[in-house]
Every structure is written in C-alpha cells, then in structure tokens.
Length: 316
Image (cartoon, rainbow, N blue to C red; front, side, top):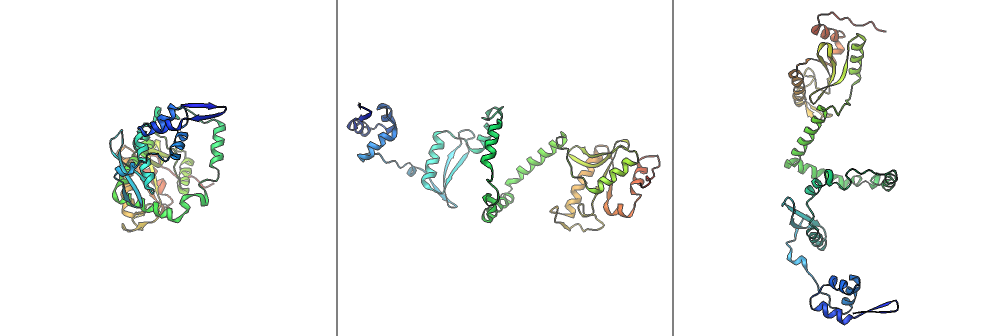
C-alpha cells in the first residue's frame, strides 16, 4: 500500500482511487494509508475523480438586507437562530460548522459561561500577560481606527438603536438596568454623588453652627443632599433650572440638559420626596432663588424643626 524508497514515500495511487470510487472518504483513506488528507486529495484531483458536494442546494437560504440567511435551531433553548453572511457559500459553510460543533445561540452561550462555566474562572492574568495585552491593544480603536469615527457607522448604529427603542425591545433592558442600579444603591455600593457648590456652602454653614451633617445620604435607592440626624431632617437643594422652578417655568418647558419637560421633572422629584417622607424623615426643599432672596431661610427651617432658637454664625 505504501512503500518507502529512501526518504521518499511511494503510494499505491491505483489502490487509493479504487477505494475512493468504492465510496470511502478522503479522511478515511488518509488514516488507512497513514498520510495527511491533503496528500490524498492531491492524488484524487490529479486523476480528476473528487466528488463534488453541493450541500447548499438542500438549504433554504434566504436573501435579506444584502445578506444570505440560514435558519437553524439552538441545541439548548430550541429557538430559531440565524446564520448570516454576505457570501452565500460562507453562510452555508458556517451553518454546517455550527451544527456539527453543536454551537449554542449567543444568549445560551453567554449564560453557560457564567461562574464555573467561564474558561477563565478563578484565574488571573500575570504581569507578563497584562503587558502583552496592553501592548497589543495600544493605538487600536482610537481616532481614525475607531469604527465610530466613520459617520456612516455612527448613523447606522443610531438608526438601529432608534428602531429597537420604537419597537419596545429596549424597554425590558432599561428596566433591568434601572432595577440593578437601585439595588446597588440600596446595598450602599454606590457612594459617590455630584455635589453642587451651593450644597457645599449650605453644609459648611450648618457645620459651623455645630450641627452634625451627613452629605449624599442614602434613603432606599435615592441619594439625598443633606441629612441632619439630630433633627431627623433631610434638606434637598433644588437649582431653579435643573429642577424647573414652577415660579419660573411652565409645565411644558423642555429642559434640554435633562431631556425632559418641566412636568416630567416635577413628577420625578415628587417620587423622591414621597419616598423620603414615607420612610419617616422630615423634609425641606430649598430653591435656588428662594435662598438668594432670603439669607435666613436655613435658620427658619432649623427653628421649625427644633425648639432651640438658631442664629446665623458671624462671618469670619
């Protein structure tokens, strides 16, 4: 079957042709003759006897949006999965490869990689691999190399997001993200909060009066501006523009920075105010313009919640 002539191996090509034409595959023959599959194929092609396969003909390949699409079923969730390519042959090949390798849909694949299913579970990168990763990524995805630098790509991404938003596909994802953020805040994992200059001034003023002040105080999932534990009092400072002071803005006014109408902002603020009160706290809201025109506003609030009379500390 196979004779060695010095360093050169002589194959019985007639025997190979005979077995191939009887129905044996090139892979089986490569194993029988103890040579590589490409070697067998080379002989078959030289004699022009290779069997031509047309697996694609048996598939229902659909043309959709410049793509060739083939349907298959995910082996885990049993839902329909699409294999797409701009090349018909590649779409066919990828489809059969995924079936042969029993490849799951993206969702099932990601779920199976959580925890112990993750190939990197309980592993860590060494300093060497970190360096190599950093070096390989240097300069990539930046400037002109960033795909989003192309206006065509940006437009396409924007259109896709709008379609998803209008179809309601993103509503579920938004709710999941919102619930996750609220839970993270409840657990106290998010401690940072943007504090305005005026809030800092109010806090400093209260501390100077000898009061214990807690800033960025958490009530359930909401972060409050200032909390005075001795008075069980929460003070919220509302900027006229950011919270659309009703004395200055109509309910239909559209706040460009927040991308909300004044009415939507008021409704959102009311939810926070109700949450604070329902949790048993005293609450006072100080508006920006109110504080500007009334320097004793804070003193009035303190006296309202305590029998002790407060006086503003002398200016240093």
